[in-house]
Image 1: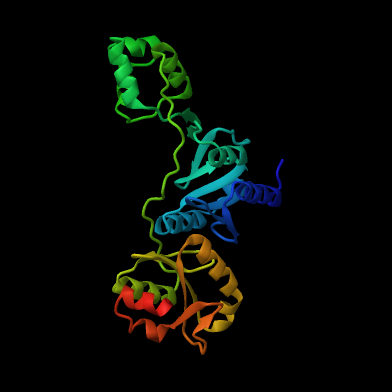
Image 2: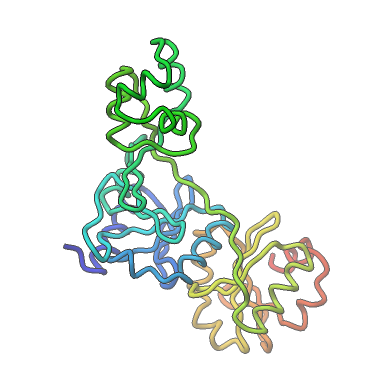
Length: 298
């Protein structure tokens, strides 16, 4: 059985072995990894311990950075998680370490989806319809063959529901055709969080004013994430002392995320820390466009 550190190290080692650029951190995600795509990963021994605010922030950050979010875990409160199965918590995909490794090392893998105790699979509904018509099966005839109702088969063919693993096995056997679809990573849906304080609210509002779509986030190495023609991570602080402690982390993370980074402070003498530009709150209100902000950051 994994301990938390063993689980974390296993995922990091797996990513390194598969030539990902990896950055480790703490908060709503533990690992940022980039190869051809950006992955944001939270590791947890027990997936039922996932904090709702962490999950929402992870979805928001993933959306704004065009990243794929994942939770890697080994169990829930009741039992061990099964390999080759995708679970879900707070609209985030949950995989076991083995399933995650197979996903990034193999060209195609077939994974079942677990929801409310039901294991289903995504199938090629066009192949199903075409093969059923080739063999002159009516909906009712084929439904009777596999032991489900005509309505249930109609719902499957029209992608209103996914069939159970058993139904897929029967369909593939009777029709002599492969229907199971390979697992595909999915981007997060647009997600926005309310600012936690007035400073965060003001900076977020100013970004919106100049045309940067953005959201506040919680429990991340930065407080705001946004995008226009470029993505932007922003750390906030009253003074530069906290920023100095965070600067190396933010700079390294921005490189892995392929994102610009900026510090917004109420008071600061420096213009940059570790190469990351500091913009005063009083300066931010005078910026008139994303182009102007981009030039300042450069």
